Amino acid sequence: MFIRVPLDKVAKAGDLIQLMEKIYYLSDRITNVSRDEAALTIEYGGSDEEEVVRRLDALCASMAGRRKLPYRKVKDNRRDGKAGGRAQAQTGALSSRERDSERSEGSGVSERSEHSESAKEAHVLLEQALVKLLRGRAHAYGAALRRYPAMMPESVLQKSGYIRNFPQNVYAVGEFRHQFDTMQEIRTRLEDNAPLHELLQPSGMYLQPCVCYHVYEERSATRSGSPAGNGSGPGSAGAVSSGPKLALYSAYGPCFRHEHASRIDDSRLREFGMFEIVYIGGAQEVRDMRQKLLEDTWRLFGQLGLEGYVETASDPFFLPEDTDRRLFQLAAESKFELRFAPGGESASDYAVTSFNVCGDVLCKAFGITGEPAEYGDSGEAGEAGKGVPLHSGCTAFGVDRWVQALAETHGYEAGSWPQLIREHL
Image 1 (cartoon, rainbow, N blue to C red):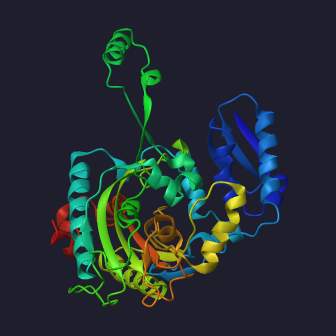
Image 2 (image 1 turned 60 degrees about the vertical axis):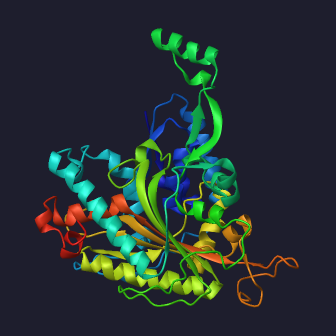
Image 3 (image 1 turned 90 degrees about the vertical axis):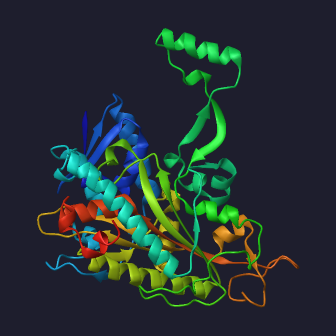
């Protein structure tokens, strides 16, 4: 069924974009949320319309009085002069996040996602070239190279805060017992076409939602001086030494997030490749490295013929009471996103890279400290003999989204790809 809610009925929520994001969590039977000039339209597969409306009213009340998220555009290379990013939402135009929620209304599969042999092969080649290119640029900054498992223990996700902040995104790994009776029962159920899930037990492992938490676990309960890159390696791409206080790591791997079914499309997948550069050190060194990587990546973006913009951003905390955390991220400019948005006939507008500074939060959680004399700017002093918590940052490249942006801009034929990509094939 379709539930139409006049906009004046939800006006007290304040930020309509945030509200539309959160409506999906009122019921798992909600499949799409869209809006026009007069009302919100909620596509609902259940039968209790009154309960959905009641929950919506409670959600609006919980958001009342909170400020809209103040996104700020800091770079833009689009040739058509299109207004920048999510700030459009303040004037009533559709924002990139609203388009994310409305893509399922279209005619289905886009031209980009055509399952031709050339498209499949191009995706593989572009992915390999991009990872090789990014790995070389990370090496130019002196980053230590790492490869981590695709699974991580629950303890790591708890320490990082990910399960608490984004429980809807995690994939837990189940397992069958190593017992004869269990194995026999599996065969019996298969013969009877019976479900197997009742025989599964928790393994205590999860598919990784990102790669960087492995770095923190590797450095857990350590002080500065552990082997790692230090940001002072040789190379080009505008690399500048950050001195011995900064430890850098780079890693590439598959990541898994249980995105809402309505939001799955070419640029939002449940499994995707992520290349990450993690930097740990003093507060100012971390911010300086984030800025260097932002400027370096922005140059690369332009060199590859891509168009878009950089703006302040926030993580998608899902509970209404977490809105203040999003506001803090934006006010502190602790997160920037580089978004591919060529304009013209293209409706694309999605993040390809995020640039994050985490303060000392993750280093505190994992017990990563430095010597007080060396890291006096890193935060509060630690206990005697235990050093002070370091600061950290992470620059994360969504490789599949870079591939999509390159294919949309240059096509599937290798001969039309930028020289910099062809050099890394």
